Length: 112
Image (cartoon, rainbow, N blue to C red):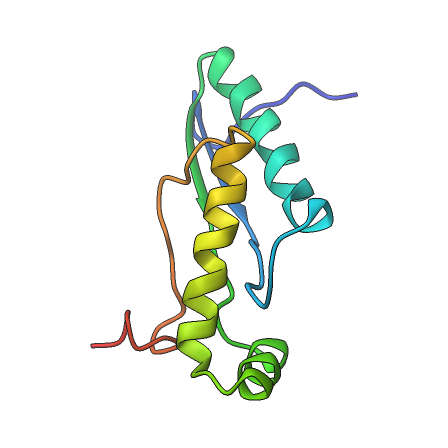
């Protein structure tokens, strides 16, 4: 095993591909968030400044199909389940992400 040497001294950046918010979260969905939360806390405990970014996929075929079947706009569907994922992360004690990136133009609430 090799020693961990960050590209910038005492700084670590982590980008995690987050949830596709098509429905209610389950343990399979939140497992990666919990695993990376453990890594993040370990790095912080060792004195690293950790920039943690986790995206949310708020539009894809699963979301479009489920929203259409329910007769709801896709962006409303995605926003509803994004809140559910956030509540699940909070209930598990997962630290909040530092930044909330969104693909440009994917959701009316982020579009200019």
